[in-house]
Length: 296
View 1 (cartoon, rainbow, N blue to C red):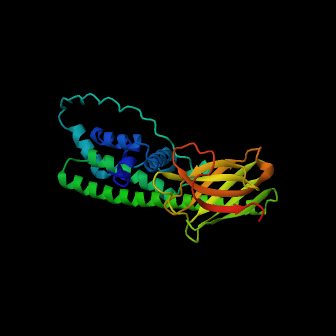
View 2 (cartoon, one colour):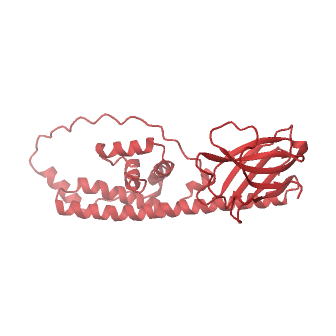
View 3 (tube, helix red, strand yellow):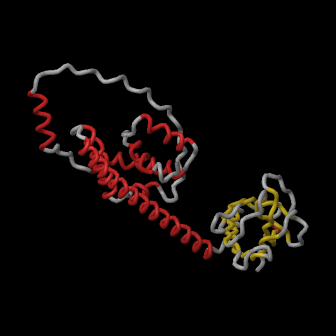
């Protein structure tokens, strides 16, 4: 099962509404370290915590009231004690993904999402408590599935909004770097080993001795290899590794690294080569993929 298959179970698990046999596969999936499902679980729990102050008390339907009165007025029956509860599932620590935006932005969630979650929980428990007729249970299940589908769509929309906010923050940071006099900016162009559109930008914060490297349009590194960024002196005699990276499916990559004090005075060239993955590289041994001068 994939993340989409577990989307509904994550919401019901947050409400404590899953059967024991349904919980175990979900916990196994969360224990595998899936960041998407872990994020959904955290969001659902946050929303459930807001229900008590968001929604008015629910009034039972007239049908439920009549059924309850009928039971109370009928002959008393011996109540069979419920079976012993199942032992609680083992606690599993799920890593919380780092939010792309400040925590208070993630808490600003449309009230429609909170109301939808409340409706889902109400329908689910009503299906178990109101009556045992098969036709009504089937109708309630159908309504629940439809509501869950709407809720999932709203949660995806929320994730898109947060992603757009994160992109806006990155754009604002780039503009600040471009206009900051203490930050040097230079470009690395692709060699014949890369597509013509391949290039990278480096923002050098001289006060903090930090490089922020952004690449785009790169080909994936050959199998068993990775890309390595290099600090290179003007005469080419000194080359120190700055850090390795692998571009994503869109060919983009980012890297933040510290500039060693011993090379800072003579640092004049930046380059990217392909190197064996998992090997401690002390000098360039692969082919040059990107390169540029800091004195452009």
